[in-house]
Length: 254
Image (cartoon, rainbow, N blue to C red):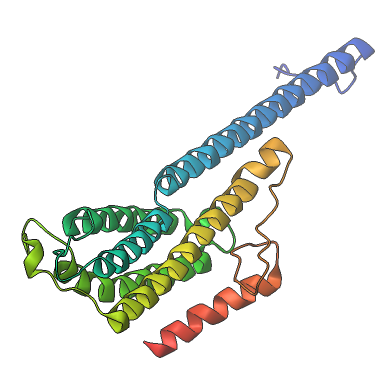
């Protein structure tokens, strides 16, 4: 029977060179494809990090409550001055602030602050300790609202409003003790407001360093308070520990 196929194990050098060249070409193409996929992955990660940063920081812009605190201090000072001008021959002239304007400003800022908290919750994976930082931030937001309520309870009685007292003679004129209490409440609100503003700053720095630091090859310095105030930063393990303790204590208290 005639052999249909005879295997010849011998190769000349030209054949070997062609074979190695073919294998090398395949390896080169595979390597280039892997590098291309890695580059695409890196570009996508960078785009995603920038998008997350923009999303959260766009909420942070214009959300600081310090302006509300300043307005409340101005109201207290104006009320104190107005009551001092009341004499037997001079009627009470209330400060030119409206309850609705002050409360609408607070509601607007409060809404913006909770939008920040919502964005942080959506992208907690973006930074190692963003979860605990968000929880601390939420604790402070609740505290801000709690400190605002005593002031809100007084404002409709001492300032003119569209839906409340609209005649000056019907307003309550504060005495020394009432002014002191209102001032203390405004100061308490101011402390919480500046804490919130500081945490907003911390969160923005944390996001810059976590999401953009490697991209730009640079890190932004963290806030360095002069007192024992908490700083929300992943660069200080003691601050992270304190943040966790605050969250734990708050959960136990509630």
